View 1 (cartoon, rainbow, N blue to C red):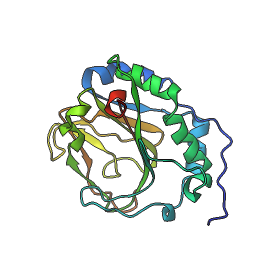
View 2: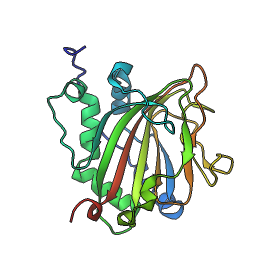
View 3: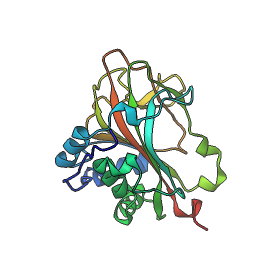
View 4: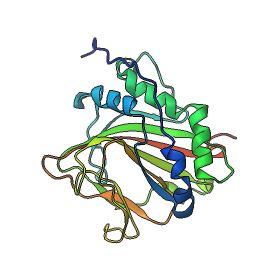
Length: 226
């Protein structure tokens, strides 16, 4: 496993569908975007998606899925570690999310005349029984984050439909008063403001279903830079 390289030959590209969803996000605090990645890059992500051995098992009750390839602002990202050096497509996508060009696109998308930067990213893999209990992110209690904290969940591949790991937004903590419940989990994404007054989560994944996703958070620059 340590000697195998998963190369990347396609440029990472996020489509203009991001900008087309900006008005909805600015009005409602969330947006569901289809065909968010170029078809070529999306297919390469699927082809080179890491096997489960590269992911860590769940470490909290509220989120029971495997995760890996994590980074948070201020932490070093070594290009020589096996996890990144062998998975070129994953690394290319993360580099794209942290690029000044994409951070500018996200800042414009949010539309608050603030400079947003990439705060974190991680990849995750669900399987039958995985779930995220409905909750609000703890960042909402952090007064430093008052200018916004944005979460983007890129659905790379998945069965889709009910009970397939389709992270949903709801006005209540039982996912009964839904705002959105994504059905297509292939090349789509859900973007939402973690400070907004709604819950997010998903019911246990049914047998025979799965979901691959990449999560990335964006915060206003002053949250991490003095």
